[in-house]
Amino acid sequence: MNSNSPNNIKQDDYLPCSFYNGKTHSEDGIYNFAENGKFYFSFMEDGKVILRSEGYGNEAGRENGILSILKNKDNESLYKVLRLEDGSWVIVLEALNHQEIARSCVFPTEAEARELLPGARAKAREA
Image: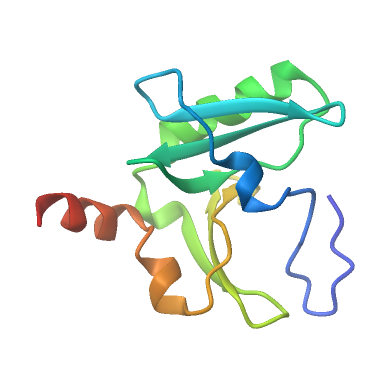
């Protein structure tokens, strides 16, 4: 992970969002794949990428990331809404130790990013 951006918001090792949009093979909404020797996953709902991972060096690391997503994905207090240096917005899910687990695709507005938070997704399902 690198954090050499001036405002210290990490860009890290994420692929473009189109890579993460695939067919989930599990009821928990996890889609996983490998690209250029690294291992990635996304958490999806209703065919939409909610969170995406960085590239892991091995499958075991990716599996730990997936377990962390499944354990923490509904805990709203572990999410942050961040504005990136290009002005776009993402939500980030962090572990209890404040390590970034995954982040959303980028959105042009804060309001659009916030629609992916657990409470907002629950309200949308009820509507």
